[in-house]
Image (cartoon, rainbow, N blue to C red; front, side):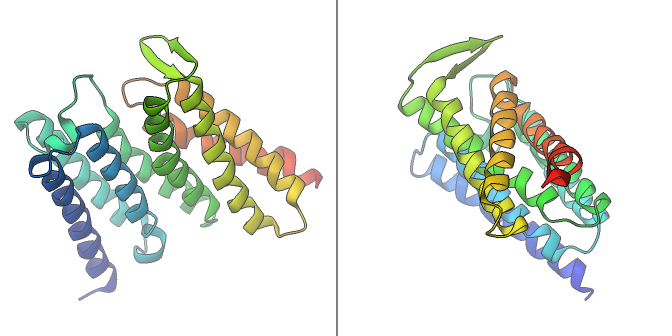
Length: 229
């Protein structure tokens, strides 16, 4: 069997196992849907990190993400996968997620497979959003409202902090240990821009806006900031 096809099958099975675990947690152990959604959100992001390693081209990524999107659309229509869908608010987040992953991989391919163009937006999406949501609900300090979305300064602050840490690790590894100031500057710009994108995006659209802003920030840094250092 072709290695790419085998890897695609392995990843497909891994996603199904992830959904299955979330369903068991929700139905058998009565874990709240907000937690099972975050579990799937983080797990999906971590599995997605394997795409550049296991999949050889964009079309396989598109196939996986399209299949994922179809399953999620069917789950909404026929009311299954309640560990993801049993929420009161309307959210396009689960559908937006595979779209973002496909787009990030396409950008990664376009920029000659520079890993930061894929890994940083995916990591910020997978980790920072759940961190912000969970801490904001646990410690709802500094409540504010943008449009119909309810946010907290705690959640936004934790999004910024986690995005800063991920960016600092990424740029620290990319630029080398002698460029701590540059890595910190890049991390502040990415952390501020992505936390702002998350704050203004409602109904799950942050699953698109956060990776998009991350990529735009990286392009800006590489064209405007980094050439001066």
